[in-house]
Amino acid sequence: MSDIQEETMALRVVGALRDDIVTMALRPGDVISESDIAGRYGVSRQPVREAFIRLAQQGLLLIRPKRATVVKKISPEGVRQSRFIRESIEVEIIRRLAGHPSADAGTVLGELIAEQEAASNANDSRRFHTLDELFHRTLARLIGVEYAWQLIDDHKMQLDRVRYLTLGSSSSKLAISEHRTIVAAVTAGDVAGAEVAMRAHLARAEVLLSQTIAAHPDYFE
Image 1 (cartoon, helix red, strand yellow):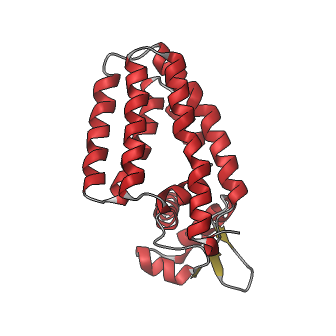
Image 2 (spheres, rainbow, N blue to C red; image 1 turned 180 degrees about the vertical axis):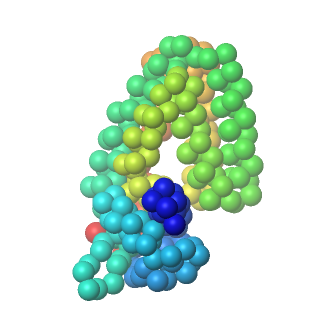
């Protein structure tokens, strides 16, 4: 296998393993091994080894020499720092988008919200999570700064784990309502209103963190 193929395979394993950790298919404290994960994804151990190193650097795995690798418990401080990074960038994104909304912004975002509603009504948390991510990525794409979303994505894994644990029907419907408020402000060109709506939307992370710690104390450091 070429170096490029190995790198591509490692990235695929990183994505799959990260998704399993975020969606609680692999829970905080679970013990995993290179051989188990290689079998799980049908790959050799080399890309798994590389994926373990990358996810350890991102705070999702704890690699212990000569001992088992463990899915790290959630860091409350990590969640709060993730939220700070995300809010700092996304507020600027939404201000710029509301200040210069593209002609099709309302249509594109409205279609995504409709898909979110369908996923919520079907109680499909994984699908809703994917569409929620796409909504926020699309905000960045609409003003030509999708790389800014990539920066957020690289630092929000701890926050994502908390969000996924709270994605019940009522939580997803509240998120949809907040998305509608954000889109309404954007399409109206209301910069201040869009900023307030985005800050309120992202501020819920602190409430979700408290709720999740109370419901799943064993998942946290």
